[in-house]
Amino acid sequence: MSTVKFTKEELERYSRHLIIPEFNIQGQRRLKNAKVLVIGSGGLGSPLLLYLTAAGVGTIGIVDFDVVDESNLQRQVLFSVEDVGQSKTSSAIERLKGLNPNVNFIEHNIRLTSENALDILADYDVVADGTDNFPTRYLVNDACVILQKTNVYASIFRFEGQVSVFNYTDEKGNTGPNYRDLFPSPPPPGLVPSCAEGGVIGVLPGIIGSMQANEVIKVITGIGNPLSGRLFLFDALTFETRTLKVHKDSSQPGIVKLIDYEVFCGLNQQTEDVYKVKEITVQELEKLKDSGKDYQLVDVRETYEYEIAHLDGYLIPLGQIEDKVDKIDSNKQVIIHCRSGVRSAQAIETLEKKFGFTNLYNLKGGILAYAKEIDNSLAKY
Amino acid sequence: MAKIIIPTPLRKFTNNLATIEVEAINIRESINALSSLFPDLKKQILDDAGEIRQFVRIYLGDEDIKVLNNEKTPVTHDAVISIVPAIAGGISD
Image (cartoon, rainbow over all chains, first blue to last red; front, side, top):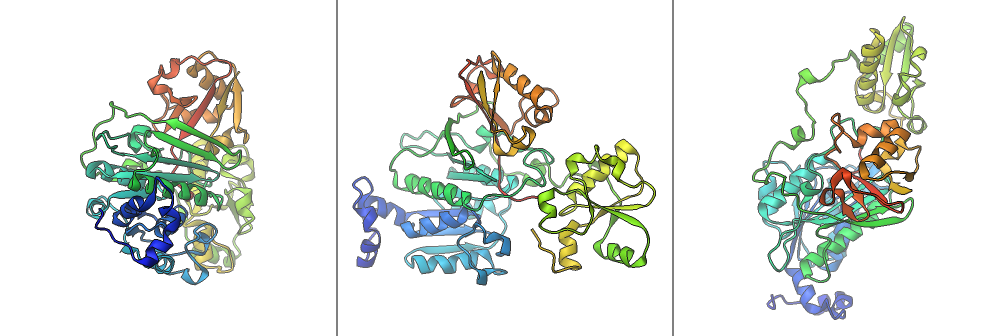
């Protein structure tokens, strides 16, 4: 380790670390010698990458397959207007190189899958999970367990954040709990957090991602007590914070290989399990409008979504569909839509099964498809 | 009365209340009391067999009830019970 050398510029750059007695040049050497893989360069990934880069981690890998979208800029502070439409990994690396040219960046512009995860993770010392979906969370966890890597975890939802350090092996060789010890399996589709309940206050990933970066630095340098065996919770609305204990669960089967995480999380269900509803495309809806035929358009989103963009449909939020069933016409064609088509399909299933409707059609792709293919002036969200 | 802290994703079932106070002698009674106040919340926490779902943990203070006495864990009048669900991010369908 003492072979890690710093230039005069590096010593000056990191001087605020070097003058902390418990950190000193030894901690800085460990950072420079470390390889960290950041999975997801979005809300959490932005502060994580900025702080790990600024702190002087030697090698940082970034996994993301996405491109920068306008709606990312509310919280993903790595990116700028000119990055919209560009690859997240390359935009991020360009920005981060400007912050610290001493860091070696490795770009993984690819979706992390069961097929490639072990190969990608194998080259790194520490993994930081900043993803936004359950299949990838379990994939990252399981890959870390198999490869015996520490998984610095953070997750956010609306106003709430969680941080923990999973699968951490201390100096005595004891390995702490992993994500499955806390949550053995994910919520099935349809239960919380479900459709229409997305969203995150833009500052929250900044707060939580910064804590995650701090844990990564602690794990690498060996200072302090990493958040292993504990789960930190933050509620931005009430400003309540709690640190709860997490225990290993010996009743859980060992993790020995990666599985199909989409299936594990209840996604991509067999088609026979999925209730089939009649559909209409946005182009067909346009033709219907022009034809002068009588029809009803029902919007099952929430009021706050209607205010972002709407198609002049009759608004009945999904949760009120049974109470307001008398507002839905049974004598003419009824088109039901939501944001992307999932909730409207649920509404149709309920209305057909419980009330015997036969005249309902799901707008395929919802208002998002309409905004994309028919009316570009509508805001996509 | 024991205080139950409701996490953000479940607050739509509690009229956006962040904490609910219930009179109960153990965790099971606390969850039952909460479920009767807010029936739609019940299926989020319990499965069809009445078991606590695998993506939800219940804490008494800072301790997981699984290492105490599960749902039979006694609660005192000043107990703080946390419902902690798995969350994954801010994307929506």
